[in-house]
Amino acid sequence: MKEFVLLYRSEPLGEIKMTPEGTMAVSKEWENWMGGIAAQNKLVSNGARLGNEGRSLKPGIVVTNGPYAEIKEILGGLSIIRAESMEEATEIAKNCPILNVGGNVEVREIIPMNS
Amino acid sequence: MQDKELIPHLYRTEFRKIAAVLCRLFGIEHISIAEDIVGDTFLLAAETWGLKGVPQNPPAWLYTVAKNKAKDFLKRNTIYNEKVSPALQCNTDESFEIDVDLSSTNIRDSQLQMMFAICHPDIPPESQIGLSLRILCGFSIDEIADAFLTNKETINKRLFRAREKLKQVKVKIEMPSVTEIGKRIENVLTTLYLLFNEGYYSSNRNTVLQKDLCLEAMRLTHMLTENVSTNQPGVNALLSLMCFHASRFDARTNKDGELILYDEQDIDLWDKELIKKGEYYLNLSAKGDEITKYHIEAAIAYWHTGERDSSEKWEKILSLYNRLLMVEYSPIAALNRTYALAKVYGNETAIIEAEKLHLTNSHLYHILLGELYTNIDKLKAIDHFNLALKLTKPIADKNVIRKKIEKLKI
Image (cartoon, rainbow over all chains, first blue to last red; front, side, top):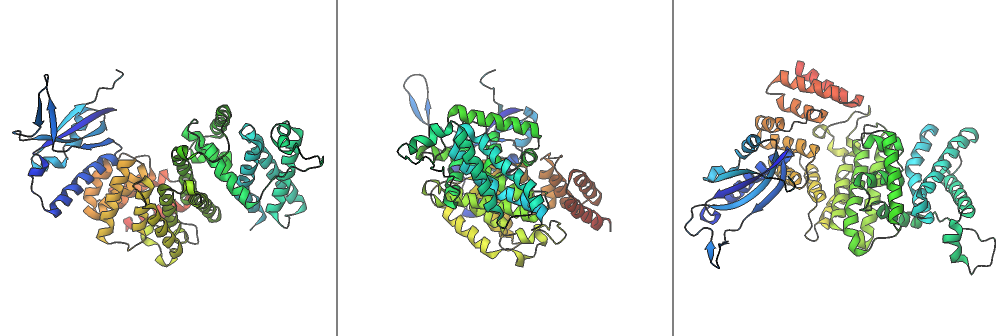
């Protein structure tokens, strides 16, 4: 079994206007999706949801406010799952709710430290 | 109670009480001798009562015999000089008797302290549970082997190594410090949960014994709530969970010993007092910020005590199972989550999710799929029920499955 990171990108979440019912429905979608992965014993970590504010550091002492100034999409969160292959991990990612709001998921394999 | 059942029953209830007191008295270096003494006491009971009849007060008989054997051991052994004698140096009375205190207070204190001594972070979790089942719960080696789905030799080796490790680490049989208690309590709770499940889900159809185990698990958990340093939210959540489950005990089996499923139980047989207690401990568990898996399970159990089929209930339960699985995976939680999913989103959706679970060696998995396919694809449903039949051992459970198959063939 390998481990994969799922990286979620979309418009900054503050930009998507949602009703309270809408917000709850979205939470439910995410919870059901992650619950489904967990039920298969393939969830390694819920991961994290990331705040909209951030800093980008580059060589030199320049620190820009970011990451969303002119950028249309930002990294909103990540999770870690378990799967036999990239294909399987991608299959799992296909049901990610972020795809319903115009976002996308990047799937990357984790390379274990001691290899 | 029939004579044949009496000694096994007493073994269940009294072994661990005497063992805890003697272990604490002898110290961690001699716990296997303490266990042997208690074992010998029961052997003597089996021999003697068979010939001379059962005594008036069987527990008292056991305590007296155990006390005498313990005193003999202490006198013959250098323990007396190491441990007991220095405390008596000032006593010039040569005939001073060593007191083996089997009062209920000392039994309770000894059990609590043994609980923590055994659940020591330096020995593997499986060994902690094995030794707890042996000393704190009075399980026989066979029963522990069943619980771990392994054999006697493996368990004996495991227990031996566990005792050696405790000796090596020189564990003191006393209450852990405030800083240590947090870590140690998790292990204790896992053991108590395992004990409760042994009684609740056991295929042993002796409902008296089953209930005993559940009640003992609840009693030990309750003991933790009575002590200020161990009265933590997780402990209250676990006790709440146990109360909710136990409230359905009388409704779960019919007079033939067959298991009656939740949907078909007579609600009037649910123990309302226990449900109230469950709610009481659930409220206590809400103090502070801690949410353990026991909190989530207790909340699920709480929803099961209410109206049987409200849509709010199943949505809440689905949500709780999602969260439970995200905290810790277990096959049972995965199956139950899928059942809740079916209640909220329908069988077709649930079947898709169920087939991703791949729990093909579990009879419960096939029963679930059988249920889900029932109004959708009769042949698949029957296939799954037949697989479940092959994988289920208890006859009463087989009968329940057979009835389901019969219903489908009509």
